[in-house]
Length: 237
Image (cartoon, rainbow, N blue to C red; front, side, top):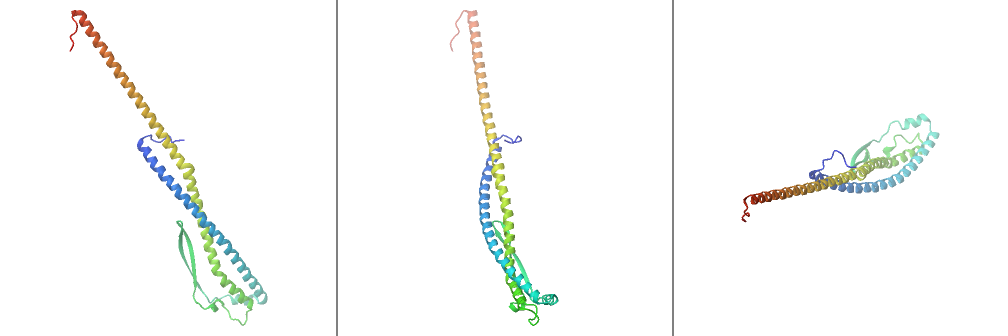
């Protein structure tokens, strides 16, 4: 239904046609963006599923090694062995633009490149299973960071997809039909006004023609009375 506050003028009609053209073009661009976001999202979800399975398997192996190490070592010795780590990690976060969505990109580097620095204890009073557990945790850390990056990316893409879908639906089912209805309403009102003006002009023309005929008849009547009074025929000019 057309808006009751709309002004049915040709200027408003031109403005609405321009807005409709822009809305149709924007609707197409948003649909293309939504489709591409869905493609990117599905790729990220597949990568997330595979990486999550890999991380869970590695964590299960590390957890099993820690369980065996805690059974072979005393709780005090295990806690003391892992109390003061040697290695430190620096985390850097940058952003990557995917279809106007800024997704995080994590990178980390260790303070030392020596792989032995990952063990914060001596090997004399510890078990080999603890070494395996620490090594498993060190090797899975990069995958865990990648998994966090992918899951955050999938979350941001899902939010952008939902936002884009709402915009597409608002244009497709609300804005564009409303503007088309307003354009039809204004066109109908302008055609109606044009027909009214045409009928009004025709009536004015008929009135002027009628007045001209009546004036001519009155003039002929006056001439006839003049001729009857003088007995002479009116001279032709």
